[in-house]
Structure formats: structure tokens, C-alpha cells
Image (cartoon, rainbow, N blue to C red; front, side):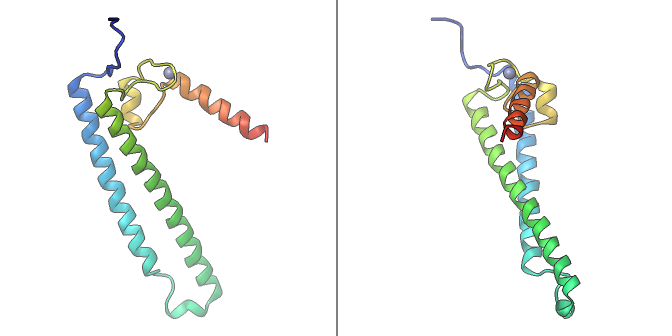
Length: 134
Ligand SMILES: [Zn+2]
């Protein structure tokens, strides 16, 4: 038996605190999704002024922005679900790339971080290079 185990570098108390923040974040995201979804069903800017093309365009642009925001919220909710699975599995706080600790400070500003700051930077430069290479 080696001592290599998949144990989160965070203490139980820190994990509990981060789990609570994940829950709170998910609640607020779900609230915003349902609020924005409701505003899409009744576009405020459209109504009597629907004949006015400029108003209609503005209302559509507004809806596009709302849709984009909703999509981003849904993506984040999915990421929170995966973060919770990692909490369960004990791999939360461990970098998926190098296996090192992501660090509590980084997790506190970025609850759903998958990588340590170093690996994230390398990952993003690789992505940017791939985009440039297209
Ligand atoms: Zn790493």
C-alpha cells in the first residue's frame, strides 16, 4: 500500500464552507434563470410600440442578451454540479492536470476551478494558440 490517495488538500471545515457557497451560488443562478426566463415570455419593450421597428429591434437585442446570460448561467449550474461530484469523490481542490492542490485562495474566488493557477494559465495559452492556429 502506498500513501498515494485521492484526498482533498482542504480540511473538512473548508470543504463545508465551499460546499455552502456552491449551494448559494447555484440558488442565485437558478433564481436569475427563472426571472430572466419569465421576462422573455413577456418582453417589456414590445407591446403598443411593436410597429416601431427600432423598438422591436431593441427588444430582440434585449432577448438575445437575456438568452446568452441564461445559457451562461446554465453552464455554470452544470459546472457547479460537477464541482459537487468532485466534493463527493474527494477530488475537489485537486488540479485535474498536475494533481497538485488548487489552493484555497483560488477556490474562494473561483469555486468551480478545475486547475491550479499554473495549469490554468498553460491551458488558456494552449487554447489561445489553437484559436490563432485556425
Ligand atoms: Zn495544476
